[in-house]
Amino acid sequence: MFGSKSEKDVKKLMPIVDAVHIAEKNITGLSNDELRNKTAEFKQIINEKIAKENEQIASIKSQIKENPTMDIIEKDNLWQEVDKIEESITVKLEEVLEELMPEAFAVMKETARRFTEIQQIEVTATEHDRNLSTYYDNIEINGDKAIYGNTWTAGGVKVTWNMIHYDVQLIGGAVLHKGRIAEMATGEGKTLVATLPIYLNSLSGRGVHVVTVNDYLAKRDSEWMGMLMEFHGLSVDCVDKHQPNTESRRKAYLADVTYGTNNEFGFDYLRDNMATEIGELVQRKHNYSIVDEVDSVLIDDARTPLIISGPTPRGDHQEFDQLKPYVHKLYSVQKQLVTGIFAEAKKLINSDDKEKQKDGFTKLFRAYRGLPKNKAIIKFLSEPGMRSGMQKTENYYMAEQNKLMHIVDDELYFVIEEKSNSIELTDKGLDLVTEMTGDENFYILPDIAVSLDAIEKSEASAAEKADQKSVILQDYSIKTERVHTMNQLFKAYALFELNTEYVIIENKIKIVDEQTGRIMEGRRYSDGLHQAIEAKENVTVEAATQTYATITLQNYFR
Image (cartoon, rainbow, N blue to C red; front, top):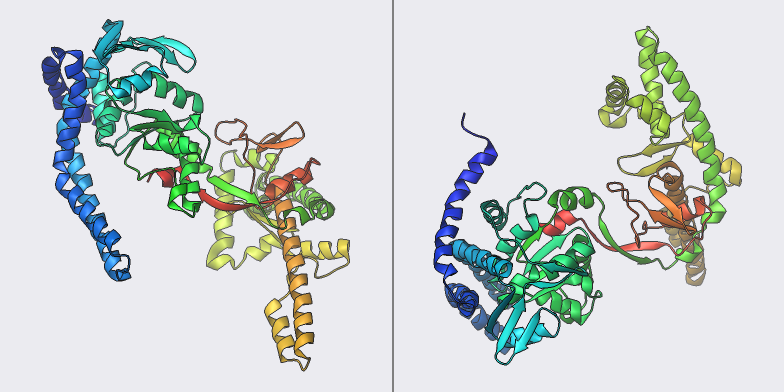
């Protein structure tokens, strides 16, 4: 009766569409040069709106620069004042852009119409046009005139501009400008919609990021849609065209409109946070971004964090091949044990006796704790009532801070906490390790504090104490490395499966994206896990890696 939420939202946006049509009537009669001059006019309005605040910031920065010996507290107070002024500028920019929206949208729509209907658009040449003519084959300089052709190369393919914004695109543009999500069906012109808020928000000179899901789209759209922005004197670039940490990539971020893939934006942010000098930064202060396929970027891709890592100092010394037989034996006996427990669990659960059923769910939970990735167990849990039945059992044993969990775990050799991606050996597992190695402390870290304290209290000389401490610290380091390596090997065997989490191509382990199923080239598991999988599959073990910086896409776009 009252319409859907979507219909109500569209109804609220219709006044903006009507305002665009009114502004369009005045703009249609402008010459090409007058149309381009509207951009300079908009920028002047924006600059006048925030001129006072910019002067205040410039004055404060000058004050700080001229007083290098200024008290640090006083300097901090001044910078806090700058931050407050910046916040007021942001508020004013939002207000003035909201006022300019109908006319700015009308300018972009009229530009699209002229590129559609006119094969060659002649304008007075500027220095910007002359620079562009050296890069684009559709721009010619003839004396004091610049001629823009409506056919150019985008993504390696010749394209002829033939799109004009309809009302549905005007509505989508208004939605994106307001920081909301615009859901549009295939063919409704999502790429064209973006040109409206891109143009509007680039007028502030503070930069617009357009985020796509792959480098081809980023490069293609920067060349295809970017031409409309370039026509109005705005600069457009794509970060994926330039190598990381280069001057050309820094210039790409200084452009009015910067296209790029989600991963490149995220990794550049991480690199900037690892920089030691201001000159090493490539990104400037974030202002406004449009995310293409936002559900994929901020939900699916966001589950896999972006990680910058490098080789660990002792990576080459990790004893993956030496420790692999022990882990392989433990995994094999655990797998055999879990298979038997699971078979008993199914029989008991299928009986008519409720006590046997209860015991059956306990065994099922034990089997799941032993090998949660077991395909037979996963399939059985998908049957009606199985998952909920095991959940009730889990809740019972986890009550009072896992007070009764030992009843479930004691029969296993090791326990897998799938949620935390961790593995812990039980007493039974430690006994088997001792039996295989002949060393009861093989997998146990010594209490180094107690040992060092005992040495300190002894009557040995200072030199003897130093030697004894060195031996203990070296032994502790070796055992720490050993426990870590075995833990990573356990994860490789129990939590990572060939052709599911990873594949082997050209004798190398390649990670598979769990959301898309695509091979993630150049990615490696960190902290020695990748080397553990390589050891498991008998491929070349490379140096282990450690994480230097990491972030999820959700946090980046916050």
